[in-house]
Image (cartoon, rainbow, N blue to C red; front, top):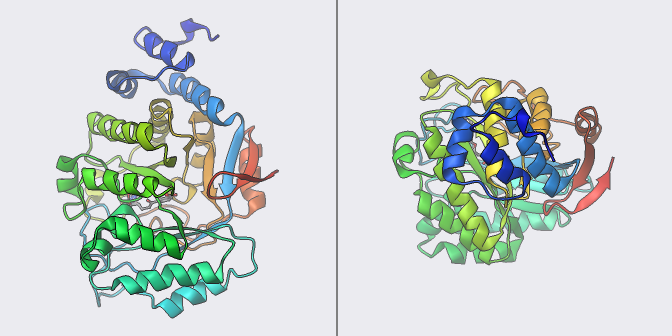
Length: 367
Ligand code: V47
């Protein structure tokens, strides 16, 4: 049992709950955001991470495909979207997508992550052929594709319920969906930062439907812009409630708002200390979600390594310089790629056991 004199007076009752394995409430969570010190949060987050994952840190061998940056939404935090025909826009044909995937045939990749803008016109058969074709080319790889936002708008354009879209894509090889598009699950915040996006309720509902088809998903939270601590707590609370029902979230990924080249830029960026505090609080509050991911292309390698001491147990993957979303928003690594050896070294030198995983967190190899 830990010495309670380590914690300040207002944190002791919360620390007690966490260390006994009890759930903390929304008010507790606010108190943590307002008053807990980084070392206090580190101890508590680590207790929760060790209960789930011991000393293991997971990563996988993955790459991204970003089919288009043309998007009907005009999110204020986005540095990536372009109008159709605008300089810097792209819209890959199926052949171009398969050429990228071809490069990974016979390589030991276990996951392809597909995410892009919400294109105004692509018919559903473009997405069907994309998923079917990727599955055929890379049958050993898990396909994690399309955010709830993309899927909902696909269904709207097709004129069918999103359930039909999900069912059809699953038939063709979709394995899970990524956690993007959640931003902050509060419609007043969404009205400011991503007014055209689906509502909070729809985002949650799409994930619930994904889970009911037996597919897992992830959840993100874009933090550090106009939201308050109360909004973050509301966001986390809704995720925790859904997880109680479905148990379908594999990982939670806090995404630090990056301010370069977007309209919210004036808001600046949070200090690293706040990133670590936030990550630890998310780990503590979401005690029913097995994994917390420190997404290194966004956070950078050194902060991601630090994050392992504040509740994170997953580093995403090798990436292979296949994503532009974060470098366009000002993330430092302009060509994000890491070898398995480098990932393993990051874990080991921080005192953790590196574990290569598949997309369902089954262990492939310990290093
Ligand atoms: O929803 C966009 C975020 C998300 C910025 O599931 C930004 O494993 C910060 O969801 N600053 C998409 N963030 C990416 C995503 C994701 C990433 C890694 C792993 C997984 C997973 C999912 O990127 C968007 C948005 O929240 N984003 N612009 C920006 N300027």
